[in-house]
Length: 243
Image 1: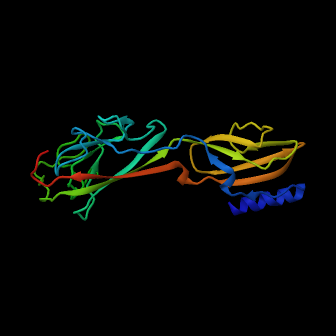
Image 2 (image 1 turned 180 degrees about the vertical axis):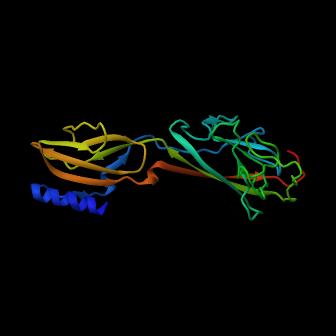
């Protein structure tokens, strides 16, 4: 990368043009809708309360609970769910989260209090507490969990944007024509440029006057702009108590 910038600088020096500038991101704004992750729907009645050893489906798809409040991803078309982790207050190990093949990509299964003690050698997948589609099953394995008191569990996840829309506001120059070094981007007279990006990357903007490049700016679009996260606490009742 440094070598590329050095060679570009030499080229600009030979042509009498200004060398490229490693620009700050102060002039770049994310103008697409901000993503957000609300708490997931819980499969067994959505009471936001679970019991140890129950089979619970956590649904992070865009939806609403029975009270009309939003749940899951604000936009489950533009955002893709990342890993889900669950930690009980009274346990050292995280609970194991399962992604059965008969559910969609925004739905996972959780057995509160269950941590798989080993993975199947062939598939490399953990053993669930109860049979799940797409996972190995060991009928002779111990399928109980230790007695637990009432406690809180922390559910944490993240999501990645399929794309974000950016606006570049470059210094205005009389007679200037501006463009971005992206496939299919058309030069324009406005110094305010917009673009959809599907990944973090380097973006080079140029200003041309009378057919000659007068200014070049190099922007490093960070990966953080493509990710959001969320964390929630859910009560886990004591062992042996129904709700």
